[in-house]
Amino acid sequence: MTSKEKVSEKPEDTPEALDPEVLDPEVLETEAKEPEEGDTAEEERKLSPMEELQEQLKEKDVELVEQKNDFLREKADLENFRKRLVKEKADAVQFANERLLKELVEIDDNMNRALNTPNTSLESLKEGVEMIQKQFATFLKNQKVEVVEAMGKPFDPNLHEVMTQLESEEHEENTVMQEYSTGYTLNGRILRSAKVVISKKPVEQTPPPKEEENIKSAE
Image (tube, rainbow, N blue to C red):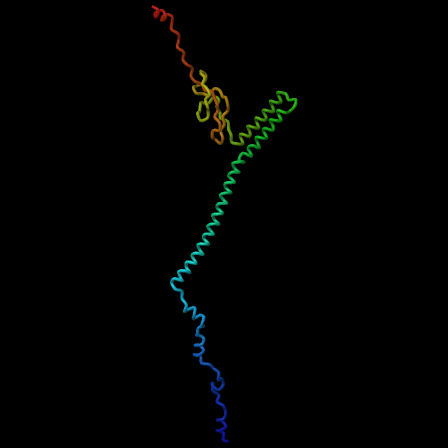
């Protein structure tokens, strides 16, 4: 056998001989792009206009239900708040004078002690009443209650209530001469008018006729 024949018997070192299973790139790209049957069915299936409208209506119905529930919750909260305000207002009116009455009860306690003390002299009873009167005056001051000044003041219909009028030469007309009961204001607003007596000018007396005039009239 010659050397040429030996060389021809060796397998050729070509790419096909080394890897007979190599695939064509175009084939791979085609296989990768092939869609699945399910995706193709979903793409092919499209909603009709009527079905789309029905879906939109379903979504709106859900939104309306949610909004209605929110409205009902807010309405319930508002109603509970209103009831709480009504109750608080009723309690405020019912117990508005609680602190005021507590102070008055203490004054009443002191009055009862002064009256029920055994072997009390007139002088000691007077001192006790004066102390209670001071306590009551302090109570009125704390409540913004002030006394209306009346004696010697000009008559003021906003502060004074006239009981009667007396003639007086010592006072100017419509001047308070006497005070039957004290008046009070609360925060500058009249609480009770002072009951007073005011002055008026004396009636001028006509002088008696002279004797000569009487004689002439007789003739």
